Image 1 (cartoon, rainbow, N blue to C red):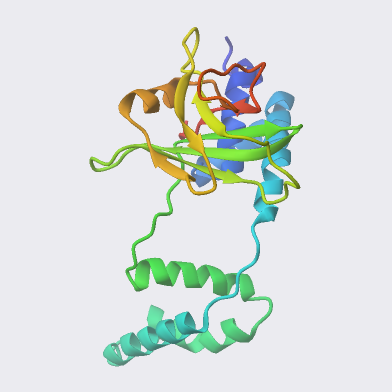
Image 2: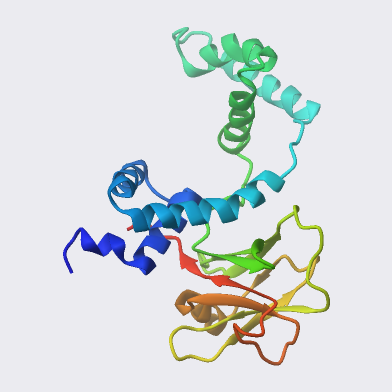
Length: 247
């Protein structure tokens, strides 16, 4: 296959589109993908598909006000660090941050920058632990023609067990009734592997090595109303499982 023709392959386009929309690309790879999109209709169509299906989930997250005590804590830390660095150049990071702090807080245009600064400050400056990390696998599962449930898979790190999480779209007016059970098809010519029960309380759970291998090899994930068996024909929800790794 010619190098250019490979980007007309549906499976490759689907994987690249998933990575692009999920933001799991380096800036260089992202620019390269955007160049390819201008020349390859199949890749552009795949990106449009992923955008259309994941955008409702992104819009469903409600806005949250920043707690007042966090501002107090950040300001106290900023002032303390500036005091320690009084003998340093006035162009230091903390000096510039202090000078701009009131502007950031009162500027409507800088609202988003303030929110981002808060996240970075809490994570890096205050040294608080964070569970934010990119998923290794993602599967948007459809119900009645719309993406209703997104399943994310995370490879174990530092001896920890792999795990998956589920997120329902808050735009749904209703959800499938009855018990819901998650499955992975395990790959080509393999049997479906049971992953666990999906409940409001069970939104994240660990997997054993066999179940994780099934996720890693699977082409599709599905949700059934029975813990005994599942198929794409009888599944309440189903969707492709895509590996989110840089290429």
